Length: 251
Length: 251
Image 1: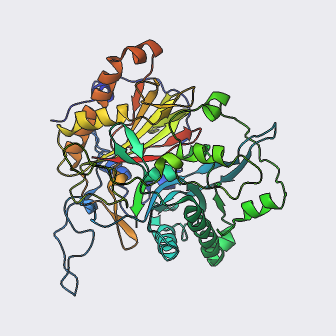
Image 2: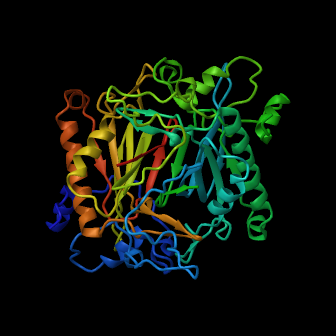
Image 3: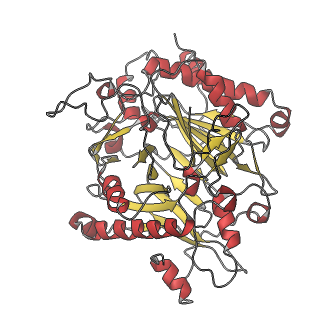
């Protein structure tokens, strides 16, 4: 029997709390459509009957452990391993992805009385990106291709499609802190790429994202945008989501 | 010579763009104080002289590669390895940490005409948490201790201190999607913990965070709060940051 949090206890006792305001509600299509399993949405749907035995947040049934499958070559396919085994090879790039309804990022801080400068996107994907030592320009097309094509963006029918298929906007945030490794009570950044090389890869990453969106008819028609933070700045960010649906991608 | 982004090109050409509004400015103390290296802030400070050769986002000089040091026992200290080598053991819990000025999370969606319910924190730490198969209750104190004590929160003097020392508020968000592993163009969640066990660990995690803050005199005096999302819900989130300073912690 799982421990009940105060909120669950209250819910079972039919107690109600007044909402604290902020009633913005996701569009119906975003909450109810069928499609690829959303780990959290899936759970919500499954627990809709009264009284729910308790909410869960692990992915839905499609994410149940599968028996390892072998490819034609007889090797285990990646992703079929049971526990989350970290690969024993250097990570070259780490990205955290969050879906957003809108996001606003400062690209120039206020200085000498000047106003700060911001960029903003509407619905789309926020990409926090960090490169590690050993990363080179060959990696850039791979990671751009991966991030723009992975099916994590929920369309109006509640299906998960790629950012290019949504189509959605992109906000790219250089985030060197993602390279941090815990040591004692502090983070160390020994594995982060050197700054000049990092700027170069970041610039290529941004340019290639822009190019890919510009080459995509759906994106061009919808007029979606690529915006990006200034490498080296503090990334002052305001984010509004309908569920960030946070994912980690490492290459 | 690193590739120049359009923004850098414009900056070098002395072109200016009108700010798009949103002039909220970080408190001076937060931008100028000395202290533990902030990978991005450090860079900003170092590039202040005109004209900068180009911004960088890799961590500052303190994060430069160090020669491997040996502990008294003659073993290599963790964190001293050059490349970011992922440990070849199962990951049991994954957390993404973001600093916030305020954050607002829906904990009950609108249903049958009822208003949604939200929780909100002011300045502090947003913890997105995901447990993997194999995690058990012994892990909970370890990860709570780690997350509340790691020095990632910037105080008024610009030093990085722990959340408990800040002291700051905590918003805990169950985020099963963090367990995703890329396969082709989709994410799979095979390694995620089973839902009931996940709820149990999440509940223990929340309870222990509350307990730790309640046991901390500084936190009690400041009246900081622990808020948390409803396990299984879509985590509708609005986040306002002075730089999310995003970190990944795995145990």
